[in-house]
Image (cartoon, rainbow, N blue to C red; front, side):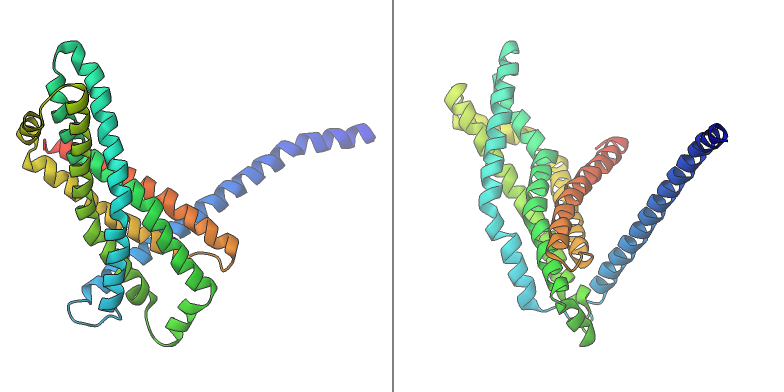
Length: 282
């Protein structure tokens, strides 16, 4: 009898494990679908609030918008300039090591200009702003949620999306293209420092080569990347803050999600735009 019971349990255990695996996968699928639906409703709510701005039917205050522009714009310039300058130095130094094998060191200027202006400047700015501003949005709104300040706004009939999300989304959308242009210029300046110091190229010759290779299409594509990154980072950061748990640990997790999702969102956006621009041959 003992042997039969053991064999009976042994025969049924794989089915139990299979059933548990199916339940786990099913729960994960339901959670993913619920999160996607909730995120979509949040995005629709943000764009619906944007449509109400011209008519003045929102709770958006100009003082909040200007404060967020100052936080996401001028205060972010130093870190953007530092990272972009170092990236320009690195690209120029590595490019010089390879191009000098063919006697084409002067094309380092073209390498730095095209790579930074078309895509790399916007990507670097997006990653920096996702870690700096996107995380800040998630932490600020998450703290307000934990302190029941968002509940107080809803009790007073004030939409949290209009009052909290709109200023941040508009501020980052406005400042990201400008920060992208600043990053491009500073990176080109960093490449010029390497060209002048190592390659014995004159400043006039470097800038002449740079301007010859910069096209309007590359410039517009870079600015478009920065503009879209502003939308992605701001919406993800605010969304993570609005859904944060009402604990200190929950706020920390929402901040981490804002950074990770923001960077992933920028990379996915870059991949989609690259495929589209290659398809239309731009």
